[in-house]
Length: 335
Ligand SMILES: Cc1ncc(COP(=O)(O)O)c(C=O)c1O
Image 1 (cartoon, rainbow, N blue to C red):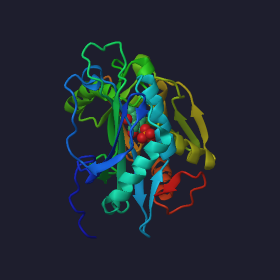
Image 2 (image 1 turned 90 degrees about the horizontal axis):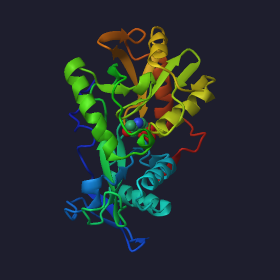
Image 3 (image 1 turned 180 degrees about the vertical axis):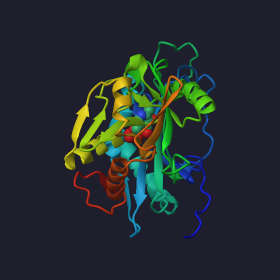
C-alpha cells in the first residue's frame, strides 16, 4: 500500500478563480469570473452588522474517464433561494447561479481531485447595502460569489466512529431559521461544539432542544437498524439536507421502512443499543457514530464501530456520485 499524501484540511484550499455577480437597482449584473482575491466591502455593509448572509455547499466529482459531474445542484440552488427569501435578500437567479457554478468548474477543471476527493462548491450571498441603521431594513444590494475548494476528508479521522455529545439544553438556531443555511446558525453552534470537544473529546453536538432529536452543527442525524431508518420529519427547525433526502431515497429503493417523525432522546438511546446512528451531509456523506454522550454518561452505539448498514448506504451513495453505479434518479449533471 502506498502512503497517503498529506491533504489540506477540508475547505482550506481554494481554486484559482471564483465567479461574482452583484445586485443593484433591482437587477443582477452579468457574471464575472476572476482570480480569487479579497473583495471590497463598505465597513457599513449590511452583512457585517445584521448577518444578511447565506451559502450553499455541494460537490462535483471527477470520473476515471476525466468527465466531471455535479451532484443535485438544482436542489442546492433551490435551497439557497429559500434561504435568501427567509433573510429578505435578493434571490439569485437560478439559471445564472447554475451558469456561475459551471463557469468556475470549467475555469478550474484541473483542480477537481480524483475520487475519493471532490470539488466542493460554495455559493455565498451577502447583503452589501451600506447602512448601520438597518436593523429592520433589508439590504437592497447584494453580492453573489461562487468559490470552489478541492476536498478530501471532512472528519480528519476518515471512517473513525464519531463521538457525539447529546445536548438537550442549547439550540443551534432560532426555531424558524433552522432550515436557512445562514452564518448565524453556525456561530450559535460554535460555542457548544468547542465546549463539547474540550470537555468530552466530542466531534460534534447533536442538538435536541426540549428533548427532541434534531441535527448536529453541520449534518443531519439518522438512526438505522435492519430494514428500518428513522430521522426527524421536515420542519423549519433544522436544515433539510440534500444528502438526507438522497439517502432516504436509496434506503426506500432498498426496501427499508423509512420513518420521518419527531422522536426523543430516550427512544434514540434505546435504538442504539442494537442499531446504528450516523450523520449525513455533503461533507460527511454518511459518517457512523460510535458513542453518544448524554448527561455525562457514555452510551456505545451498537458495537461502538461504524455499522454495516451505515457503510452499505454510504457506499451506495458514493458509487452513484462517482459514476461507478447507475444514477436512476438523475442526480448528476455533466459539466
Ligand atoms: C446544519 C447542517 N445540517 C445538515 C447539513 C446537510 O445538508 P446537505 O446534505 O444538503 O449537505 C448541513 C450541510 O452540510 C448543515 O450545515
